[in-house]
Image 1 (tube, rainbow, N blue to C red):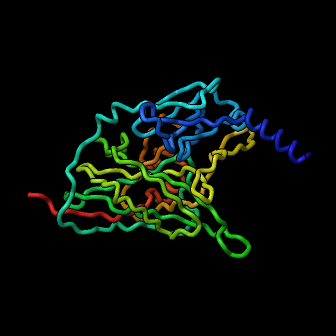
Image 2: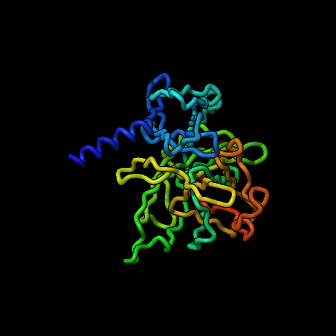
Image 3: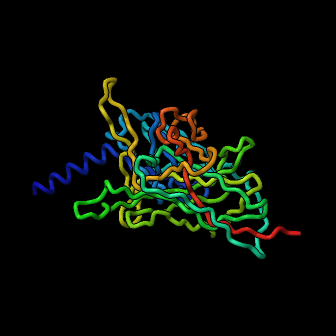
Length: 324
């Protein structure tokens, strides 16, 4: 009886402090999966695969509004006071107008490999957080029609996370790969019309994870295309995104500061690529502005100062013979 009473009280408390909110396409009423939820205070979270996210009054007491964004939809900003359990997102007219119809590539082709660059040095790695995104540019080979077949994603499974028995502690992390067009300055701009791809990396993955994107039919434009990786969080064994706090609070001399939670695996940066070719952004900060990963982005970055200023993502490309 005591256990039942405790459980009942817990459920009542939880229901008064956390609210489940579902995001739907306004016309089709289909769920909007993995939409970005920005709290306006430098923090945020994501909806899960069913378009559902939780708003916890206890976890986020200082949040009074949300901004919701997703590829192909208009941004939606709502007040948290009296927020509805179901929110509808409008398709973006601008996104629809930006779709470019391309002829299907066929005929003879050859495969070209861009090797991923991996290492196992913990100190030369990017620590993935939900508010950061890393973009790497891919270009056509010799100007010929080129498609992305496979993305080669280097990761680091650090030894410090091993158990007493020498086995790597279990984890299951959901990542998202998004694609961006290239602007006249060579930087990522608006998302391309190609769909995003989500995938899970665990402690059993190889040091280079192979992400098959051939079915997406990604044809690299003349100016190139960016592939951008972003962590969404840990998952349950069945692949569902765990609704967990995306930051931790640390007491400092100036008061409590919120620090973004880092997730495994780490992403190795390299000093073996000439020039700065990697762009980064913090999607809940600075109006989601993309910046070249160099000293102007963060003059205190140990990665940049040591020359590890590029993420060595590789790819398998299908290069077609030019048409007459």
